[in-house]
Length: 433
Image (cartoon, rainbow, N blue to C red; front, side, top):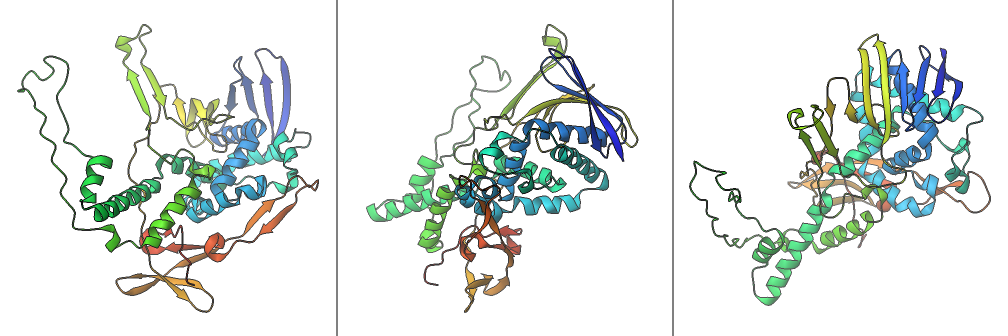
């Protein structure tokens, strides 16, 4: 089915243009206000998402393409060999594998909206005469080298943002390295390294309910802070369980992660984020105020894309009127307001990632891991072959993308441990093989 996308630009410009987009059920009107925010008027949710995809692609396609590639582990096909190491890290973690599983788990209505959004993106990509983003010109890439947009691409970008707000394996690794160093120092100089670690690096004290506001606890006696209890020495030492090679693998993994854009914002201390609400009883206007600051990584262009979606009467869901910020590459408003309420988001820093030491059984003569050992039993691994490609810009040849040679233990094979919640083996010690 074909229908027209009618774009009416208002504000400082006075221009009326019509663009034809495949798959729309009815004409859609777009009005840009004086702040260049698009207001999309559609007859169905699917048409609104398709037009949002079209506008995202028109204004932010290179950003969208880079985000999907960084999370998928294919950014070297865009940026060149300097991005190959980051691709290996991303491919091993498997955010795109998770997105593919999520696609299968979504119901038909959600899939239809994702497909509509992808149609809108591809409509812009396929229209002749649209200006090609200048970044591709510098990278010597033509439209022929850029894959069409898919619903899984949108889910992969969403997984990437969720990953950046939750991944904390570096804390497990860094704290383990810190405890190992403290215990080694204690063993050498005659003190308990575990106590040093717990009191200096991971110090924990009881909650102090003493407050500075007089009469805050009128019915309670004065609260006194209990004395800090010295951490007890732990009879368990890391050296008895973790091999030195494992600690070295952890150090190297952190160094590699620091060079991968996908890990930007995930390493180091968590600053969390915040939101707050003021009741309308306390404001001059009489309306409530909501402030939401997710503390996301600063970038150019920015993460968000402001938009307003108005659907007169979707056949399945009825009317919709929602405004706020969207994420280029993903359909829908992430943070915003409808006619009844507003919503924001803040990050709750939780420990959601665990790192394990595994012992591999290597199959000879192929030198490929056959499984891991658990309770003296060999458990099979899931092995996923990976294919990496890199762009070679700067030689004057357009779309010069070639195969990259990556060894099986360097990322050419991904090893999945089913017992560990289907988590990947992120690093392997191959010395002695």
